[in-house]
Image 1 (tube, rainbow, N blue to C red):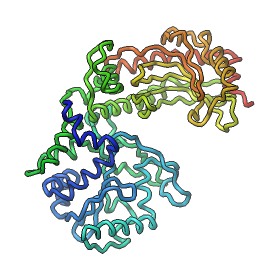
Image 2 (spheres, rainbow, N blue to C red):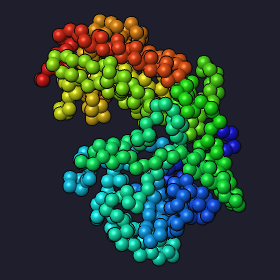
Image 3 (tube, rainbow, N blue to C red):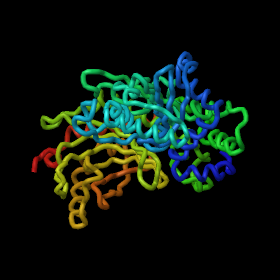
Image 4 (tube, helix red, strand yellow):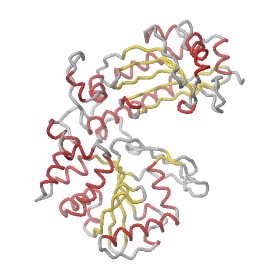
Length: 462
C-alpha cells in the first residue's frame, strides 16, 4: 500500500465514515455502469434468473438497508439487501413483544433485518419509501404490499459484505455460520438456515468493477483505492499462520509508529482486508477455544456449575486493537454498588493495542460497563481483590504458568482489576491456543481448591 494512495482524496474522504462512503459509491456505480451492474448481478443470482431479470434501481441507506437493489424477475419484484460491514461488528437490537417471528430478544442485526420483513406495517412503509426514491429518479413504479411477500425467502436475497472472507476455504470454516451472528434455531418451531451470503469486497466489488470497459478517471481512482485496501498479495491469509504476534502488532498500532526503531521486528502496515482477516481468525479462535472449554473447563463448586465463556471484542476503546478473553462466571460478588446484577467474572484476557500487548489474569463485574466503583469505596475494593480474589497464594499454579509481574492494576473507576505480563511472541494460531489452554488449565486447577474465605466472596447471597 503506497503512501500516495493512502493520502489520496478518496482515501481521506472515505476515512470519515467508511461504510456510508462505500455504500453510496457502490450504489452510484450500480446505477451508472451497466458492465459493473451485470457482472455484480451475475455474481449473486443463478444464471437462469440473471437472464430474466430487469434492473430497476439501486438505493443507498433506506430503512437501515445499506444498499437495496430493486429488480424485476419475469412479472415478480425481487429485492437484494446488501449489509455493508467494514469495521463495526453486528450490534444487538431489541424486538417488541408480538412483533417478532423469533422467540428470543435481542436479535443480531442480520436476524433483525430479516425478522422485520414479516411485519406488514414495516413492509408498507418500505414500499412507500422505495416508491418515493424511485420517483426522484423519474422512475414510475406501482408497488403494492403483495409485492413484498409475507415470507422474505420468496423474493429477497441477503448479502453480508465484508472487507475479507479469507477463512472461507479453511478447515475451521462453518458454512452455516458465515461471518455473521445468525442463529438458525430461534424461529419458533421452524429452523431457518442462514439466508445471508457472505462475500468479500474483492470478490463482489473489485473483481466486478475492473470489468468496466471505459471508467471515468474518478472511478479508476476508486478502483485503485479498492485494490490497495481490499486486496492482498499475502499468501498466508487463508491459513491459521496469519494469526500471529507480528501481524496483530502491525494492525494494532498507529501508522506513524511504523518507523519506531525500538520495536523488536520490522512491521508493515496492514490494509483493511488484512486487518479484517485478523478479525476473522480471532472469531475462529473464539469458537475453537469455546469448544475446548466446553470439554476441559467444566467446574462444580458449592453445588454451582460455573459457566465458562470465551469472547472476542474488536472495539477496545480509543487505543484500537484486539481483545480476547476467557473466563468463569461467578454467581455473586458484593460489589460496593446497588446494581442488581451481582455476577462477576474471573479469567484471562489478551489485549493488544497501540499501548502494548498484555496477557492478564483479571477480575471484573460481569456487567462491566454498568458497575462503577466510587472513589470512597475504591481502596477497600482494590485491597479485597488484590489480597483475596487475585492473591498469588490462592492461584499458585496460574502464577507458575502465567508468570505475572508483581504490579497489581486496581480499579480506576470501573470494576476491572488485573495482574499481567507482556504477551509472548506467538508464531501462529496453534501457539496462541496453547498459551490459553495452558493457563486456563492452571486457573481451573486453582479454582477447584480455593479456600472457604475466598469461596464465600463468590457464593454468598448478601
